Amino acid sequence: QSVLTQPPSASGTPGQRVTISCSGSSSNIGSNTVNWYQQLPGTAPKLLIYSNNQRPSGVPDRFSGSKSGTSASLAISGLQSEDEADYYCAAWDDSLNGSWVFGGGTKLTVL
Amino acid sequence: QLQLQESGPGLVKPSETLSLTCTVSGGSISSSSYYWGWIRQPPGKGLEWIGSIYYSGSTYYNPSLKSRVTISVDTSKNQFSLKLSSVTAADTAVYYCAGATVYWGQGTLVTVSS
Image (cartoon, rainbow over all chains, first blue to last red; front, side, top):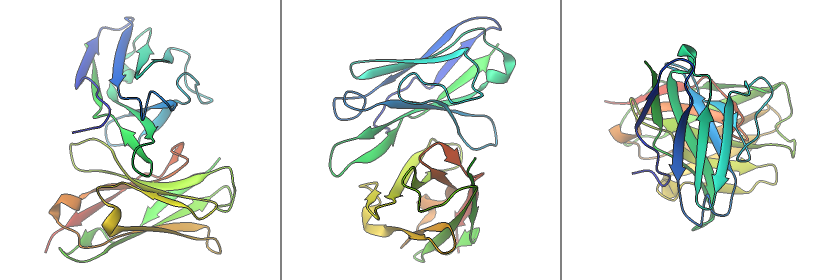
């Protein structure tokens, strides 16, 4: 069971806007920034969003992130077929001696 | 831009030690700008952070793996390594090395089986 909670699946049609949630606690999301990763089938995860809402160079502005309290969200607007992938949230957790924690992942299907 | 590449045996016997190396190119492993880590993904499952090492030498490990994990850096070779002892079938996974969780290697599948 993952420390961060994500819905196991999400779906949308091309052009739609979809959001994926990530719920944590005061020791992780509540006190640290959130990263989001996209994992296309058979490939390594790719950083999509860092520091809650920042996009690395090359990531389309269709992808956006937000955080409020102990939860975070990833929004994808103008959904495209190539967005079909697994999405993971991650944050540093201050409990014990500190550790990175991941969400269980959300499989996004483009219908 | 940093590039990372994992290397090591693809098959490890139960109770033995899994050893992987990550070679970093495009930047110095001694840079204070990055920290280095390992993440794994069992087949069909999600991501699990194993541990990280900082330029200062400080290490942080997943509490559930801490007793079996060692991460170290070899600055002369621009590499960092993972050792996971007493492996079982549950340690079968794709192992990724990463720089600051930004740059990732392609991953290497390690199967634990006799």
